[in-house]
Length: 159
Image (tube, rainbow, N blue to C red; front, side, top):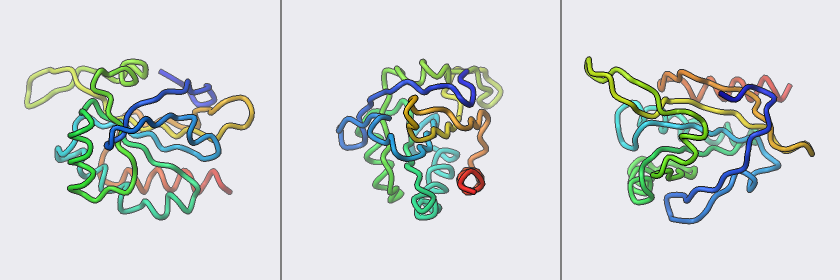
């Protein structure tokens, strides 16, 4: 698992409109990169809507928000439109980035162990000349209140 201070390797995934989005597109801003298991499921909806509801404050803090799941472009578009999410959702159906970040983990689903995407958020700093570095990792995200937690961290780092 990456640690704070590590350089984050660039990536490119398609957003909900099928357009490529790269981490390096946001070299001048902190990036909130949140991975979620599946679009339009209860926990993921709570988390995504939390980022929606704090989006203006996150923007005021200078941050870019990107959500990523293994859903396809069409599913990401439907999820974004249904909940009026103001940020890009990136599709990783081949799990290229999800595997790179080692986020497929065993999970207990109604008493049965299954493998799924571990809900994790990465805060990536702007490029200061040595690459975009990892500032913070939230490895075990609880969806409710998570966006406010991220906002508080960004506000504290600005001081």
